[in-house]
Image (cartoon, rainbow, N blue to C red):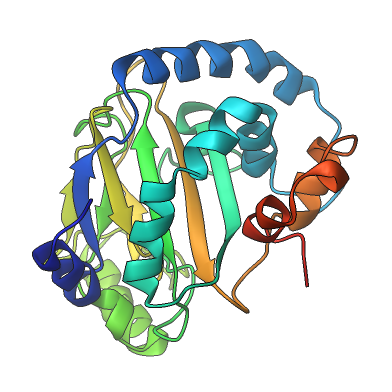
Length: 253
């Protein structure tokens, strides 16, 4: 499914793109299903501490579970992580037009990394709408997953100060980095990347949704952020899953 050049680019730069591994009919069905379950998710009363984006992802049901479990995708993740035992430790689905600016003064996500160089993970991110330059595209700093978090934070702090937009020090950085890549993600492409790379978003000024779905594979012992959400959403089902499926969704010790 992937070649040596893509593997090398992932390890050096932290990302590559491939043609979305879902057919057109599957993508249409995913979009319809997302519209169906969104009202249930909006009105849903989920336990405190559960990631709401993960809950929306899991409400999509068997259709999305089977896509995540495709043998070709599992083989790709095992190759990129260089291990045989992997699991899905985090997932999410949502419309950033509704969530990005929640409680914030700007419609944008600041620079951050979901782990340092020691955190091994492979994330697949697929857009349900075009994430063009005015629709809050993901911004990625190539190679930053290999650098110490404190070093990267200091570099971004200086760039933020140089914008001249702050009268006092800010702990959130949005400034343009000279080496950043804005990923204008079309639904026909999937971003394969490590969220250990520093990333942010552009400003969303376009009218309309900016939906995306993503999930992260981890090696044995890696993060299991959403395992309790899986048990909650599939409370009547997960115990009857095969051991292989329970292991893949991080439900076994």
